Amino acid sequence: MNSEINKFVKIWMTAISCICYCYYISARFPKGILRLLTIFPIIYLFIILPFSLSSVHLGGPTVFYLVWLSSFKLILFSFDNGPLSTTPPLSLLHFTCVALLPIKSKHPLNKTTTSFSSTSQLKKSTLVAVKVLLLVMIIYAYKQDLHPHVILCLYCCHVYLGTELVLAITGFPVGAILGLEIEPQFNEPYLATSLQDFWGRRWNLMVTSILRPTIYNPVLNLSTRCGLGPLWIRAPPTFATFLVSGLMHELIFYYLTRVGPTWEVTWFFVLHGVSTAAEVVVKKAADGKYRLHRAASGIMTVGFVAVTGVWLFFPQLIRNGVDQRAIEEYAILADFARDKFMFFTT
Image 1 (cartoon, rainbow, N blue to C red):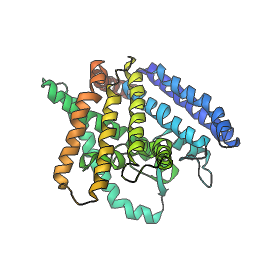
Image 2: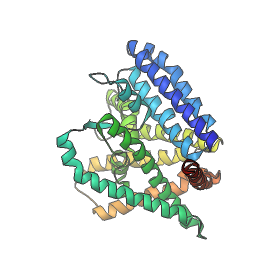
Image 3: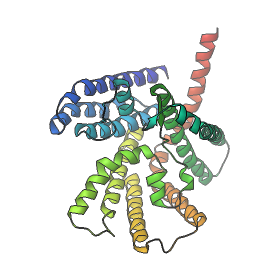
Image 4: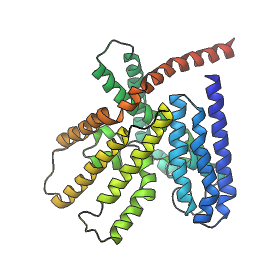
């Protein structure tokens, strides 16, 4: 554990140094290909840095933050787009946090916003506490003699709760340090009433905000120039966005398993891309005339995501023992924390 944490710290110190380089040097070059060429070595370094980590809980977020989010943000920055290009320019601390972490600020905190959000913040804190308790109960349940299908359902919940809590733990302290209200990365996806609602407005909104300017909008502009009618114009960018998301998840899975891709997770996102694009077309054609009841559409949406996830998303992780490694790491982390506590109290 000590060795893994040391590697983790070195990777992130290197990443911070790289972002300082982008802030002080790359930003001085004119936007476009020339700036991208100065940033490309940083993107390459971000791709190779996480290979030294073997921990699921340290390696997974590091790959997600550096290889996907940071790289895409830097590509947008090369062309003066995205969250790193603002007027007035961000401070170095703000630039570094936004570049390396999955955060997106709403607005600066002040007395008005603080008083307005105090009640909602209490509700959010209560909900986070409930989710932490649920995650602990799920981890404990793994030790019981349960049917494999039950364990798979628990693992689905585990992935969702673990991902949301890790992103929340990352975002809240940074927001407090920077004096910003940070947008939540998840918006209760289990309440989604359609695939468009689930992926576009509720699930991992940081990814949505990065894929929109890098993939969706350029393909939408291309579809417009190709003369697609209003009924079909959003189908190609929707599908392209899901395809890229699938390929990036495939890359993350490679870091976690160190096994060649089986393309199952890519097909998961291709299936959802086709389904979401078809849903958008049908909604456009129906023009709001036909609507399922919210309860029915919600069950169908969450059910479709869960069934296809069990079919295509999770098998590669389970087949390569990533789920078992993740569970074992909780015990290792508990022992590590206990040993450190004993060391500092004796």
